[in-house]
Image (cartoon, rainbow, N blue to C red):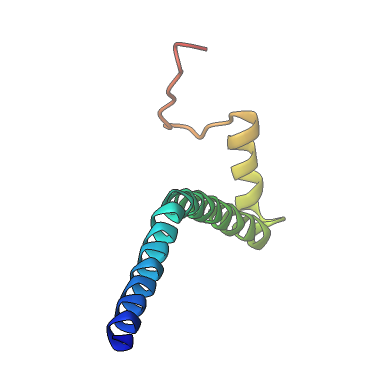
Length: 92
């Protein structure tokens, strides 16, 4: 008789532990989903910063050259070379 009681008790305890672990897994799922979205957002920011870093390294490599001055004149002052096509935004 003790053997049946021990077996039932072991089965009941096993069931309780399994149910508890399943509950924990499902209760953590929204947090996991939120962290996955946050990770993707941070990875996108990292890609943007890497691109910005590469651009700054390029600027540093050409600093003080004629190419740099020409690029800055085009970007900041709006200068164009002869025969360049100029597009004007009608909304401005």
